[in-house]
Image 1 (tube, rainbow, N blue to C red):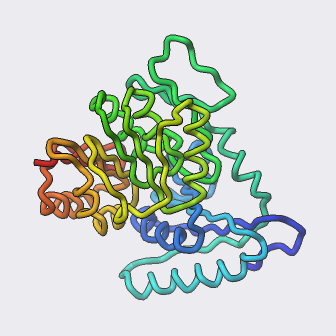
Image 2: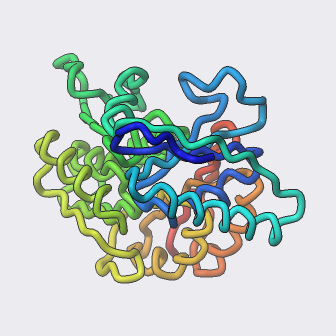
Length: 299
């Protein structure tokens, strides 16, 4: 598992694990590399040919000089998961060198326009047709939310059904795709938050590319966010949703809605229970593959 000694800027560390453990490993990887991780499974446009059905490969990209420490932290974290979780197992792939540009630009090979309702998510090198109602140009860079993942698609679908709304908050904004989409749909007061400075930089860049300068992007935790909104969307890990349920609920106006996703089917009951105990009513649940979106209404 020693990285190559060849001169390079970055190493990729990869873990293969049963998909039931992907979220737990993802949370561990985010603690090591807050800029994010890449998840590759059978739904990925180009999965590894030797990736077994039901498994996922999670990858982080770390500077070469930080690889040894990151690998040690990764191995310690995985060992803790083994001790804490019955049946947990994983395989750590050998570290390999990669130029960071290979990751930042690699998504371009697979990124295609995505149509969700009236939204048209497109890369910068493809111009939308003039009759497209709400084109959204997205450059993911090092963050997430390209419109390709089921959770993002479901959020866009619900946003398309909910607009027009006067105020919108995206919690855990990543690329800012949902906030920008809300702005394109005519929402006047739009805020996006994320704890990752890299995500906030990408979101600001994407907002500028879309002429959505009125979108306010803040690098802060949801627990410190102020205000009340007609519609709040949180496309983040279920554990983060549960931990911040009261804070998210407090940000929704009476009669407003909260969209929660990043939830797998086996986590749905827990998430529903936590948010209904906060005074919300489950309005509907959507599913795409193993992923679930819960739409709550504030009484």
